[in-house]
Length: 114
Image 1 (cartoon, rainbow, N blue to C red):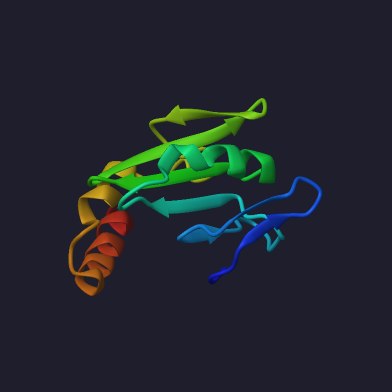
Image 2 (image 1 turned 45 degrees about the vertical axis):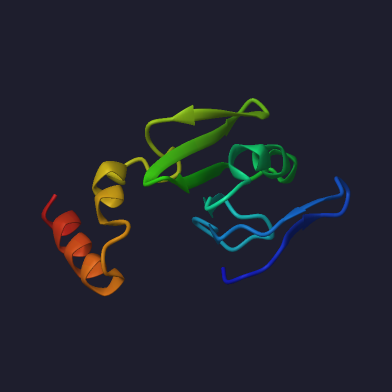
């Protein structure tokens, strides 16, 4: 969706994720937010995403991916994405940090073979 700050006027909350996606259709609040944590932030920002109603939040930190899914108004850490249940997260993580161009081509080739 590009770069923007997600805001909820009625809840007075806002945040700017590193990447975010609307799955299925375009909407004001995305289904998936991805945060690359370099120095600080991380799961402390889940409260803001919860207030906005973002279904799933992924954190990439120290070469590890953490997935949090919103269930019954709270985030639970999961091993897989609920939004993208067929996505092999271990395979995806194995490409993070590689040369982006080569990694994209190789990743696409591997998932097509699955």
